[in-house]
Image (cartoon, rainbow, N blue to C red; front, side, top):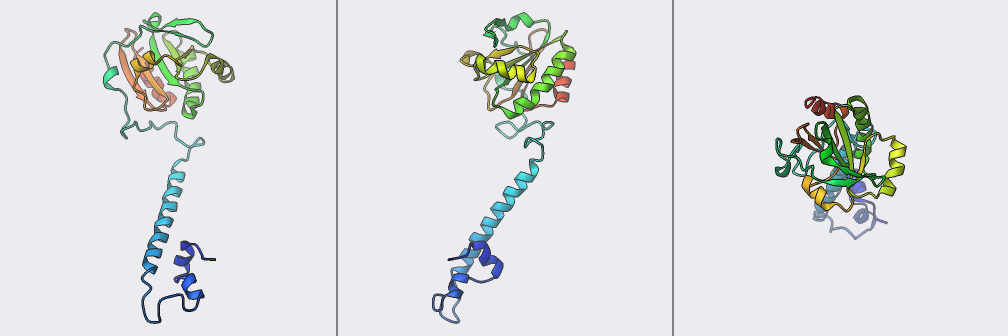
Length: 223
């Protein structure tokens, strides 16, 4: 049985050709295949090393640092897009069902700071954010409304999740409401959070996970 390429590098010779008399090149002639084998072995070892480095960078308990804003699709930290530029009128003329089947009209919250959080029950980073949003709704409830819009869960999926997490703000069903998602999109991933001023204007769109401090900074700047 032939050894792996890593054994070739470690031993400094080719075990296949050296263990079979007459199978290598004639005495005194260089083994032209050896450099190629060594190149392949080193390439494999470099790939493994790179993978180990990436794993070491994911040092958080859930594989990411919740305090670091993630890269957007283009590799930058995107806080807004052309459709939701800061200072433009927020698309609040929508009515969505909450998880209990009750109609929720977004425009009815004008006069308060509105935080719209697009998420899903299967999203790990979204789950990290929810306790922050619960605390912020409790602390700033007189002047703030948090709206959690699940992009593809059913009401039946939301209800046990809300109970488990003790969610204290409305959870809206965005599943099947592509018109609403298009108004606030495009989404290159979730979570995505949109901050709306008391006057119903876009303040900021943040793509990716955020810390409580990041949420609170935006909220208090609007109070």
